[in-house]
Every structure is written in structure tokens, then in C-alpha cells.
Image 1 (cartoon, rainbow, N blue to C red):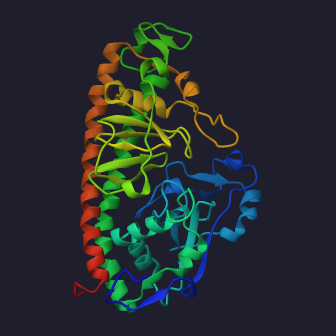
Image 2: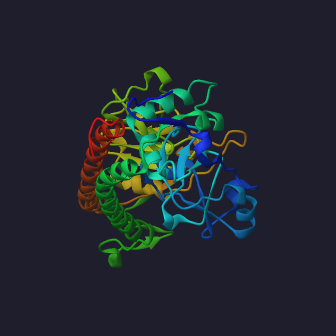
Length: 384
């Protein structure tokens, strides 16, 4: 199906040297190591952005098992299953060498016909995202894009000089987004280090004068998560209900889209239940958590609890379908500081999160402007 009317289109399969997904190494997550060859998963692929959060690595023997899905410089990565289906970005060179697992497809166009950068921008354009999502939900009960679907896509192929000019213009927006993203990472790192210093290493203000018994300072106590902040189930969005809007939609891999209605008043906390088990996200705004996550309501959410959950070990308890059992999650013991220390941490960490939220919203505005410009550029409506 040709989505743009003014350009020559070609079927994607014949103009690519590779289209295909990866695999999970034998042993699954148990073989992941601290360094080596990166194994790229769907949680690393966002629209126009590669995230290093949760990036896993393989030792040499497992890397060799997956040599058929080696990622090369400039490859386009496309999520093909699950909540994050259709998300797309290019692989950054800093993550190489790398492989992909079965939830991510490598799309490698012949650059003398179709620039990978141009194809990546086309994939993340709102029009193409809607089309890919509709195709992914057209067969079976689980969202999925097959190799055949990807190969049959008809994509615009203007002249290379035109592709280069379009890419250069759109890249200006992405450079600003990337600069803001780096600032966000530094702010998040500062808050995480503060939490770790105070509540893991117990070097909080005045700790020199506080007695600590069995890892618990005087005036502090341990409580199970279920007594502090009960986890609630998210609600599935049917394909027909996935109407974009102002409210973020959270899955276990983070924001997986937007919706016209919010299910939960923010700020609140999201915890991955299926897929990326035990992932934790903070939403400053009202949001919609889907059925692969739990959420914590506003009255029980706090910046301190968010970081406490980031440092909590959640394990998969269902062998057949990996997932986080709520009773098990509720049993996790959390260290609760005395009120003065808790207030001091919130007073320091909350402004950091407001800065993060401001930069994230600025990035969303930049992405929206880029996405409004993108189809007009690609359709030849704006002369460049």
C-alpha cells in the first residue's frame, strides 16, 4: 500500500540486503553477562531513539550462536512483537558489536537506492506508525509484524539527493532531542546516586550520630511493599481503542504510545508485570497503564518509593509465561526512613524530577514538530 502520493515507491524486500529477526540464545537471560557483545531487545528500541536501559551482553560462545543476526552500522531496527511493536530506530555505532533477539528485526536497505536514515524516518512517521500498528494487529491475538509483511511494504524512493536533504533537515530536530536526552540521563544519574548514598550505603545526613542495627537505623523500619503501596492491575487497550491523545500509555517496556483518556491520575509508578518483568517507571502526568503492568496510585506514590523499587529485586515466578506475581511483589521488604530524612530526600529529588519532566515534554514537542514536518517533506509538499 502506497501511503505517500508524490514519490516513486518500491517494495522493500527487493531493495534490502537483509530483513530478519534474531533469536534468544540457549539459556535465555541466564547467559547474559556484564560485558561482551550487546544483545538488543525490544526495550532498547524506541521511535527515533536507542535506549541503553537494560542493555544485555553475551559472552563469546553465545555471540557465535547468533552470528546470523549480526547488527551492522546504520542498520534499521524494528520491533516486531508485543506492546512495543512498530517502534523503530537506527542502531548507534557505540553499541556495536551487537546481535538482536527474536522481538527485533534488522532492516538493511541497499544505500544506493534507499538511505537507512530516510527509511527510519519513514517508519516512525505518524502515518506509517498507524499503518504498521494496524498490520501488526490484523492476525492472531498478539501484535506482530512478520518478515513477509515487512518485505511487502511499499516505501517511497525519491532521488538520493532529495533523501539526503530531508534527512539533514529532520536530523536538526533529533540533535536537539539527543542533547536533552543526555541532560535527562545526567539528572537521573544524580538522583539515583543520591538515593544509593543515603538508603543503600546509609550515608544519609547525620548518619554518624545514628545507631544502625541489622542494617536498620534507629527511627527507620522495614515494611512489605503491599502494606506501603498496593499494586493495581493495568487495563488492556483494544486495537480499536488505541486512539492517540495527550496521555502516555505504559507497558512493561515503558511508554508504548498515547491515548485520549487516562486511567490513572499522576504522578504514579508503573511496574512491569509481563515481558520486562520488574521494570519501574515514574509518570508525572496522568497515564494509562495496560495489562502487562501494575501501577501504584498517586496517594501512595513518591520519588523515594520509585527509587526504592528500582533497587528492589523482582523475579519471574511463572515458568510457562514469565511474569511478576503480585503476592510475591507485595512481600518485598522496603527500608522506610524516618520522616525528616524522607522529606529532605523528596525536597532534593523532586526538583530534579521536575527538570526531567520539563525536558521530556520539550522533547515530545520537538518530536511532534518533526513528525508534522516529516510527512510533508516526504510527500514533496515542501520543496527543499
